[in-house]
Image (cartoon, rainbow, N blue to C red; front, top):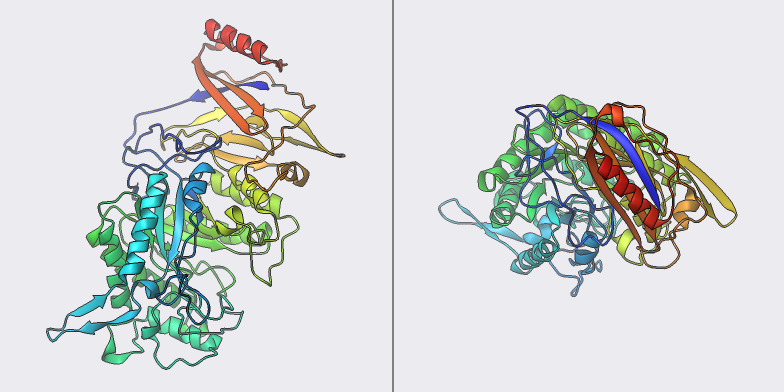
Length: 563
């Protein structure tokens, strides 16, 4: 056990910006750390890069992607199509996502599954859409299940290789799959198999230019997709479990579409139309607009402006080989978000292929340190994130790294406390601890600035920054994280032995003393914090902290009586 004392100054001032309120963790979160629970719809504020709840508190989106509903050609997994695909979702995800401490899920779905049959035109010029009731009922069930575990849902209109009309596409496009998925097959008549990357690129350009390949046999493609997204938004207008729609997954272009500026303008125009259609029927929803992912286009970001729609959420994905390659892209996306005054969301990343299931995956040898650097950068800069995907965390799907190790790393980036701060609140703190953790014959050391605690697998630094919730950066060694993987259970952990805890005396004159009590047990890390008012002339100083629990409680009692 260790008792840690840190001094800091809270300087709250009157402001017209959204205020601060406590955001409680999910009661189903099995252990700290737990992301703040999302209760009700969220919104954005023009000029702010944060997402807010109804009380005006900043609430980060910290979650995972749960895919499976995007596969197939209108059929469930129980009756697979010619490529063996069909929609379905892993039932264990409902409880696990909440238990692990995340607060949201991004769920890829496909327009094809929602509308496998083309609309028909009535004599009065009205298009009648034939929605797949079995698929829609499944979406309702998924929303209900995640809602029962207090997990917020963002539906993603997914596509890989654009549509199942394109089969056996080459690996250099997106999936290298037997078939693509996303847009309905009826939008692409006359496509033969195998498809070429040039065909897919041409079809992608036609779609964003709203050019029909069907003629008068169906609505123009963007108009048709508007109807699908409007239907979904309207269906959940009274259900705050659904907090957003990701309007189009991973758009990409090649040189046949024109210049990068022109392609970026195509995206802005598309997202504006789609966002307006969604907000017209459900103004509560966040509307996520994506940049092309690095690697699928010559350059990213390519957009020069955000769509002029309420509740816009700027999104990017990272599938690069390492952090040094990813960092310029992430900085570029963050720069755009700040310039446009919109929140930013890393809607997919795979820990530099640590969670990849692809046959051509090449694991970054420094994936742990690189992923920690990526998440630390996100937390420091208020970038929301969702890990792709649940399959490499909660099932036995083979990935380059055992899923308990991935889960431990991701959970290490969640905030240990569920307290949100407003843009008008700031704090400065200075304290450090050092710890030595032995695992077998190897010994690792770590230290950090700000409030630092020793835990089973990592050292976490709490940083209170303006316009963000309490954020966490983590640093840990491979051997320390590996010690957590002692069984097949993602929650297994090992308490470091033989470590000592000390706290440097504070040199900051402040109005509050933060006392943190850290308890370690084989399956639990419990952090209890108390803020106590004091004056600068009577600053308690603690240098060496006893490890016995009764002594710690006595010390806390003495401190509280001095205040």
